[in-house]
Image 1 (cartoon, rainbow, N blue to C red):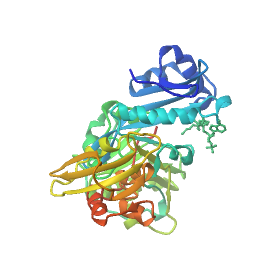
Image 2: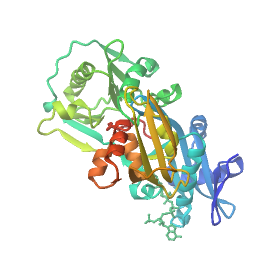
Image 3: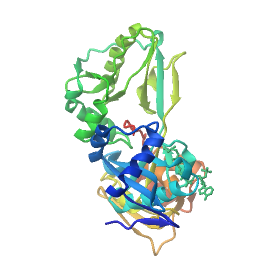
Image 4: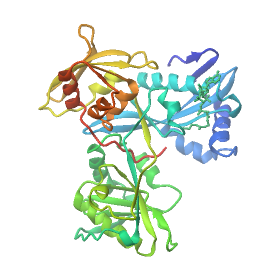
Length: 395
Ligand SMILES: CC(C)(COP(=O)(O)OP(=O)(O)OC[C@H]1O[C@@H](n2cnc3c(N)ncnc32)[C@H](O)[C@@H]1OP(=O)(O)O)[C@@H](O)C(=O)NCCC(=O)NCCS
């Protein structure tokens, strides 16, 4: 159905049955210690993933998969391909297979209604070459029990199980749409996140839920335990959660958890001995510049117009100048044939400002954007305001 991409003798295409053994071999050698991949795992993941192979001289030399997710951009929600399981046969690495796969995949995602992609890189520079860039700042907070903030809350607490996932959806979706980069999960994805091998317990604040924490209880005393996931839709919910977690921490050295960089902890509860570090960066890529821009949902009271020039050597369809106008909550994008650009940037920089962290202003300060017209740049800043980027799905 889709034209395969061929770079010299490397052919990249969706996985077909005749390449299944080779596909499993590459995955096994890279991600499963060389052991056979359990059949139930393959079956379980099948409906969720798109799989691709790179074939060289009739043999599968490389594989990659995509989980179909979404990513918020404030109120907007875009399809986002979560790229996972990128691997090349050890003896065939450094001969261009990985590059051929990433180039083909990026164009393929654009052609299959997937304007965004995201991934966790083994090393960022490899993916940067194909237009990906690090977006957002995930904080890992480690708080020793003796420094636990003294927060008092009168919010009700519910203890839930993964079967109660629907009670979390509204809180999670509010958390997600107040930021960018978060996957608005399907039922299957909720069940996967909460249905891991361990038995998970969920503490939820408020009814309806205004904050929750997912815990894999460890009976060991005086360890530092990691909380699987927290999200909140109100500050009082967040504070209620801190109080409950303080109870959990009572026979522990401390607790750690992830927060987006706009979380309340750093701004309100920092103390000596509390460790905050930026951890597990995620990279994003805009596969389809006009498609992604036209799906934004700006405030209907805002309007503006600008011409942005994009440098994208991997996706020729993105490369060049785009005239963008927005009013009444709608965005129109068309090739700019009759006007000079207002500002110019690489697809990596565009992917960052599209998500919002770093934003246009910060990137201009880094001189990563060439600005020819302040008016056009300001119009773009209204359409693409700064927004904390975060993702709670790991893949
Ligand atoms: C990461 C990985 C997928 C890259 O695939 P690959 O086929 O080795 O990638 P390429 O050959 O296209 O590029 C890799 C390097 O080889 C270089 N290269 C490409 N073609 C080359 C050639 N013909 N001769 C010499 N070097 C070449 C590239 O410039 C690149 O250089 P770098 O080392 O400076 O980054 C592969 O190495 C791999 O499977 N690694 C282990 C699993 C893994 O880490 N996966 C990523 C998870 S996020």
